[in-house]
Image (cartoon, rainbow, N blue to C red; front, side, top):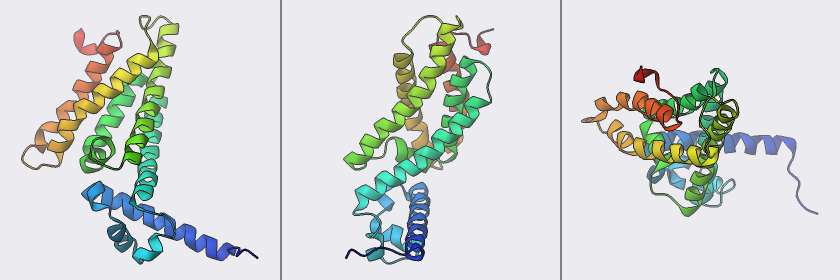
Length: 209
């Protein structure tokens, strides 16, 4: 007869798994993927390394779950910002502004999410991440085109181009942000990205007036 976990045992394992993920998020923000070894995560979570393997088979599996945890949080923050804006253009700008500002406030974490060398499975998750942001932006472009607020265009293509441009534009500042000698130049990036976004949409940036 197969062993069935009691509710108490399952609750303990679930709590331990959550503690592991919280520990991993903290390490990722401090040290990036390179610092998230199984041993380091287990030590931060206060459990034996062997116990960690009850939840994740290897570092790649842990990294994917960790990535999804952080990305879900970032997408939720972007969606909250979008909901507070009135026009489609403002909502697209909110996506870029919120993502970029949050990235630059936690540069080590954002660097790990966007560009740090990692396992192939994490690179696959990065594609999912970018597509999620693309879809948020594309939905707003579609609405703006339908109401004549923006010129006709391929919403998914424009959105994908914006996501790619923003990621590329942030790569350098993210490195600079956690390098003390250069980090003080980073804040100017956010308004510049917002202005670029509004122009790229084919609309009008207030700074053009």
